[in-house]
Amino acid sequence: MRSLIFLFYFVATAFSFGLAIASAEDRPNVIIVMTDDQGFGDLGVHGNDQIDTPNLDSFTKESL
Image 1 (spheres, rainbow, N blue to C red):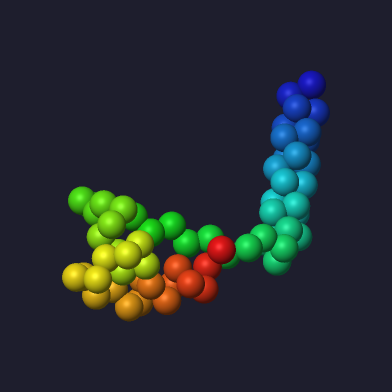
Image 2 (image 1 turned 90 degrees about the vertical axis):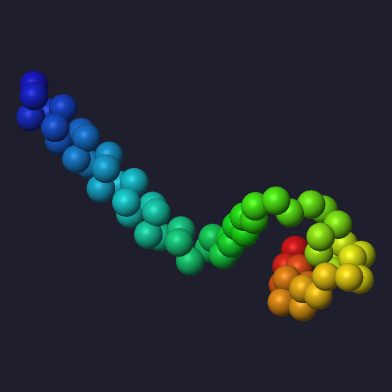
């Protein structure tokens, strides 16, 4: 009985790894940017003309 349970977990784990590898090409790239002490109006893309953020502005124009 113990070997049957072990076999079940082994097959389930191997199957889940196979699904993760097969669908890796279909998933989009996701980048999460976290900042500290930044408000909504602190970026140029949100209308701030006093702080220059060209890289973040171009990044937001290219993203969804």
